[in-house]
Amino acid sequence: MKTPTSKFLDLPLELYLHIFLDLEPPDLLTLGQTCKTFQELSSQREIWEAALRSVIYKNELFEPSYGPMELMDVLELRRAALGPTLWHNKLSNLANTANHVLHPVFAQTLERGHIDDYPRRDIERVWLVPGGRYLFGMSQADFTLWDLGMPDPIRRVSAHPVVLGTEHLGSAITLAVAQFKSKYLRFVVLIHGALTIVRFRVYEVGPLPEATTLRVVAEFSFQLMAFHDLGLYWITGDHLFFVVNHVLVFDWNFTTGLFKAWTCGDYIFQLITIGDFVVAFTSSRLIGWKMPNLDPMDGGLIIEPKPEEVTLPPDFRIKLGDDIELLLTVCHHLINLPSKWYFGASPLVFDIIGPAPGFTVGRHRVQVRRYKLDFVPSDPSTSSITFLSDFSFSQPDARRYIDGFKALVISSGHFTMLSPGYLAPDDSAYLVYSSMEPSDDGECHKISLAPPPGGHKFLSVSVCPSSCRMAYYCDNNHEDGYNRVHVVDFVRGGPMLE
Image (cartoon, rainbow, N blue to C red; front, top):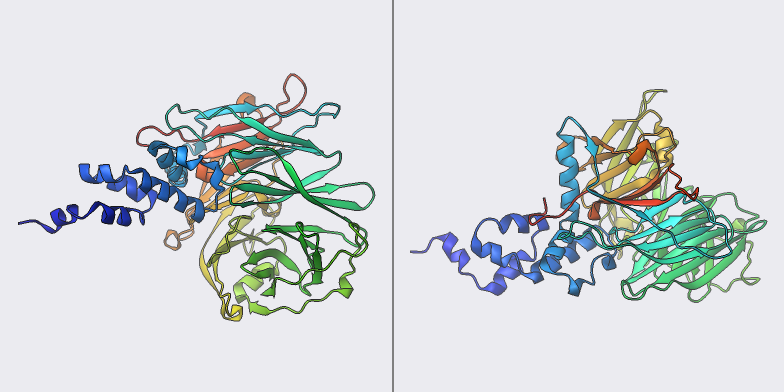
């Protein structure tokens, strides 16, 4: 007589595959170790390709970072799908040891692209595109985009990096925001020109990884005379949103050249789009507008919008909880979203980061509180915000730490933060790690980063947990007097992927 277990093993292959497709990558790996039948079933390429696509969606990663996926074998798919798990296992294991130091297993130094007739500048910022394959390096007047290749689980080294493009823009620049659209990478560079002229230039590259030529999609210039603070950039589809003085919202369609500007009325902490709505986080509520009809630019490419002349009644207002309102009314609190690549699915998980209540000079603590927004597009006023979990940790200067919030990284249920946010030569860099699960009762760990070779100091760092990879530059100038970008991998993938 067959037992229930043996009957389960006699199920049709198609049913097994259907069940396995719903499992998380670490569960698939564990199940494959239980018996020969499951080992064979869990080694199907279809299973691991579906698992990787699920990881890409949940962690908001750039799909061309992996592949082309159809050319990846089972081991490569498995290594990529298990990337977030390997990262969290690595940090969890270090947290339970006496020596909390994260050492790389592989390191390389990148060569930059060179443009004739232009002076070379030191790199001042690095940023890994979510997925860990594509890397930006920026100086005061130019940027370089690299293809680093995927971590290779067989040879245990990374593919040789390739410079996809270098652009010299001649004046101070900022990488404002980036997004992906299918296999295309779009990014916006803010160029500070002469006098009060500011330009946004939109670039595109793709479809990646096959087509690697940088293209300028559009450019938009305007007068900065009436403005003081320009930021909170957000790009979705063909629209670039940005906020001036934390109250004036701009929507520019860089394909049609049309735009719209309107005032919010409240101080904006963060601006995003959810479906067809533009949503502003203020200190007391969420304010949303249906995507507005856009207008031609008056006066050509250079415009001087007057905030008092543009109003757009909101389509909804959602009151934030009293705890959120209290945090946001205190100086130096910031709203951190999972990613600028947000897919627009509900719910949206976000963090509020700032000095913990009651901090005193010399005894600062940083507090991280996680919330969930269940957005209802059909009736936004019925949307709700729920507290999920929180933790705090000590930091000598919590306010300076908060100012470096762009170094924060969130991935599926976990939180990784680089400390300090802005690195100075006398800083020691470390990671703050928490699983952000409510049952953890606010537990977090500090993991030190092994310093660069030669006793040098980190100056800019970008971490991608999903690829277990980090890029940085330090205070080490090479023989030619210029710095370099360095890339390290923290996990090597053997047969069982550690």
